[in-house]
Length: 194
Image (cartoon, rainbow, N blue to C red; front, side, top):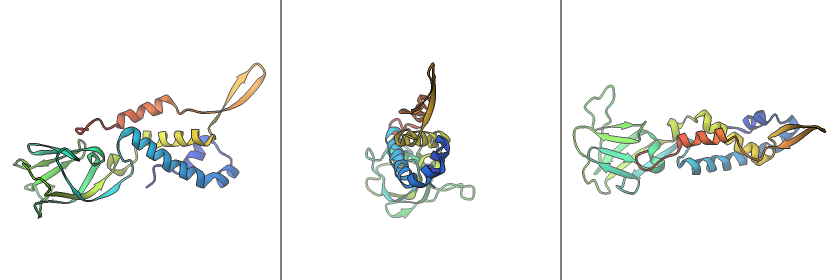
């Protein structure tokens, strides 16, 4: 599911129908650029994506401490594990139907916790397949708003009126709202421990 659509941007700026018709594809391309820009700012991927056969390596994409694996970078946002194998042996997740499993995923903190034992030195033998993305793949409203505002500024369609003694002047917004951009800080990944 996309972060936002050109219709969201046009609605935000109040663009007339002829502008919407002629600029829809250009605005869609700008949305993709704005998503990349926001992902750079927060250090995380916004939309959900598949993680296939990820080799978990200590000090590369995770940190292993005792019975916990702290997922790093974009992998911090893994929200589902479909397969986790250690030395070729499938590990079972703890669930409501399997309380004696081998591990559970703490999605809030980006941690895989081993049940009843340490992870130890698994070297290059722990492989994960699953799904990742900020907020479980559901785009937070603040992220969507930031993308919309970035695109609105870049298109030059975000306008406002300034009243002067001589009358009204229509101006173009050249910056996003500071408050909106400050909200992105809430989603910024701060080191391997999230």
